[in-house]
Length: 274
Image 1: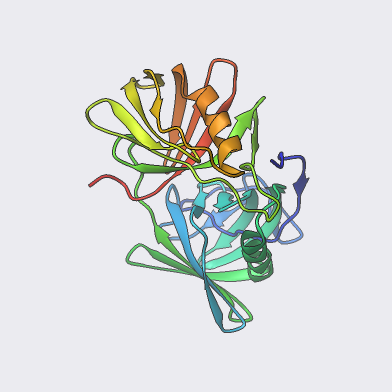
Image 2: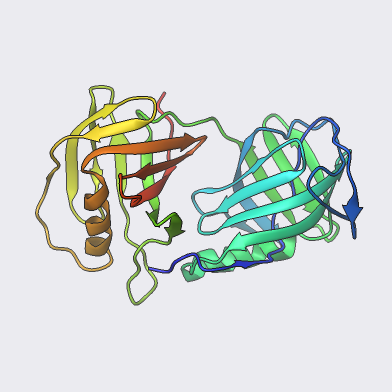
């Protein structure tokens, strides 16, 4: 498992919101509270990154890649592996990327390559175009990113894919094998007060009493297979959390579950319940 150990600058995301905020700018990059002047409906929307086009080659984005923005020119994003923050300036449909910071989680090769490509595409001034809940950001060299507005995911009825492990207030990447492959675990809360899914190796089910901020898990029932790594390591981490009363936070399409000792995990939404 690779712990988030540092912040580094990564040229990545440029978004901001509606309305007008005034402040000073530095070297063309936005600082907190800098000017945001646009009629484009970007604010308070979670944008799912669908694809990236660089040098005429289109690449599909990994699951969980998304951007969320506020009206003060602050953008936050999930890339499918790392989390990124950026300050930007917007004037009309022109977006200027400011300084960015990112977590430094060790990613599988495919995700690392996608993040590097985004770093090259999101630089300088970008043109933003919004049509029918679709957003396109295009650089001066023609490279572009395609995004789609997401709907918030409900806790119940959504397929949640475990995306990270929480320990001591730090989010870490999932356990990996020697090839850099991570374990895969899922869970779904049902209307009948149960939860079921896969722990990384074994399938499981349990009762789950949900309130506005807590979930109380009943006795966990699971299959008893022995699996190769990293499945068993991930299962061990999840079993420690899915026991008794825990707290949870639901933010748009991200779920964080923590036990009383602060140990927990994060999960990204799949398809919302209909």
